[in-house]
Image (tube, rainbow, N blue to C red):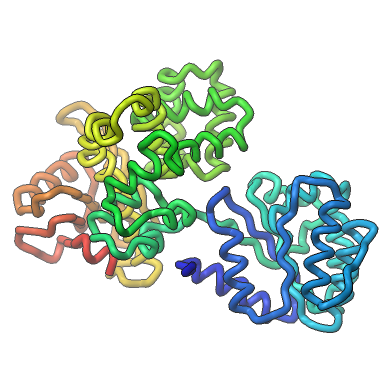
Length: 459
């Protein structure tokens, strides 16, 4: 199976493997994000003796026996027996005095649950063998709160971690590497459903259309990912009903705290705050404030940042009873197709365009590197309304406004003039205007315009 993306993280791990003074790495991130595959790929490339162990939700003795078998195979020893994990780990640190050794403890929280003081045991071994061995220890886990706690000042491992990788979903560009056979338009559609989670993207079948992949993987009874979102939430959240209420409100487009509270049936404001905070830590909801009023809590909004969760709560969760008794094609046409093409995909296209601009900014390919990108809040004095422009950057010269259009017709002079007039009427003093179009342009260009085609996003 080919490995895609994660070049930065691979570089970080290989640098650690080659270093003489870096011993311990901490890798964490949500389920299905690709932590284990990243580590395994680096181990394949490193050509250093390594022991990879996926910790189990069993007793200390059972884990010790399983790990000792891997150790025996790795070193070519007869079957070894250890009294416990501490003795086993000490043996490995001692072995690493003779040769470089990589030890991976994947799903570390499972082992930690059953071994009192495991963090202290590792801390003691790291301190004792620091500078005296060639051990490279990688501790990995999906329970983000638990993994982050290892970095706190109160934890014995504080100050002992040389490399910390908080693995995030891939961006639209790296995600598209999994489905390169599709057109650029369809890459946008696929990303709008499956997002940047490698596990989901590996399931996409190039022999099927976008529609067929969606039906096959999530929009049909018994689909591979039909229960993925609910299973993930159930594993992390004790009161799932509250989370479902919040997600339904967010999926309908309510983003302000007060609106979410009014639309959901969450019992209290503190409960809502707790749920939102948990979902943010899980990387499936984000809190975003306008770049021109970052510290105004009333103008901050909450948005579902995981595309599969957004698709699920928009189309599957509320219609699951219908889906279970209807023909799958009819269900897709009646409850998904129109909204998906006219609202959902164009909305995600805006996020893709933001990611594209960030990509270009990091590569220093923009004429003016920006320091901020996000929504811009405005009050329209003519209509006495307020709103937000979704893609605005700020650099040393000021603001650049961008408009993303995922529509079948090219952008014309009339469209550009209308958008610029709205921006000026709302009081946004933009010194340039950018337009990103799925279907190209039929207009004049001038120095104040930035025109970007869909093909540029995947070049």
